Image (cartoon, rainbow, N blue to C red; front, side, top):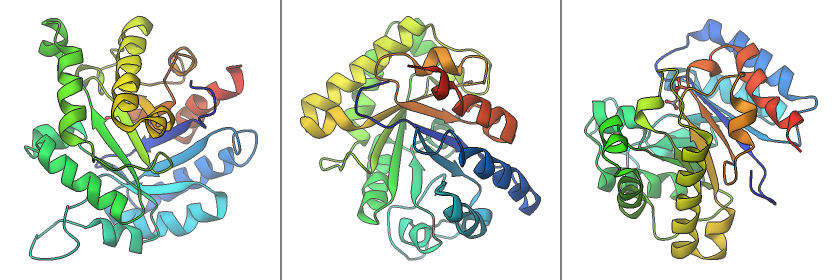
Length: 255
Ligand code: PGA
């Protein structure tokens, strides 16, 4: 955690979720409106087919809805893509860009991620830029260099700390049940904070830095207590309200 920063817990449903999954979203919202509301900000990123309905449901509960990707341009001949403008128009408030699955599945470079991040911010969306090293990069000791390059290449020059979020997600920890040691998470997050402050000054000290990769109710408390870990980006465990709320409730236990 970072003093003076309200944590954000974000769920990334990836390519999961039908209209029947809105029951799960309802349960998440109901669980949030209690001891968690006020303590943390909550965001769910369902597939784009559910954006509008989710946004109208969640807005009654102060829970944000976001998309998992956006195109860099506002409109045009880009079959299958959706723009940040369309996401905002659906009632959603946020977008994830540069997730490692998009970097690998769709060949997204830092340059593409940067353009998408700029589009998100231009449209007033909370914009989460994901970075993280691959297993071989961790093993070869180049983690911090990889993070530095991704930060330099995919972060916009102008940010607003209220809207801009960085998610550190070691690629080898995503969906594998593997989690870096607390020491390694702290090293990465402290490095990211230093880079943000060096580039953005005061604003950089206020940007939320999320940890993502196999966050579960059983490890959330330990992870969320680490310096400069200002929340979580949760994949698999965000699909079940009980698990997701179990992660969120880590914040009721940290001083
Ligand atoms: P996971 O996914 O929690 O299932 O590891 C995290 C992510 O990809 O954001």
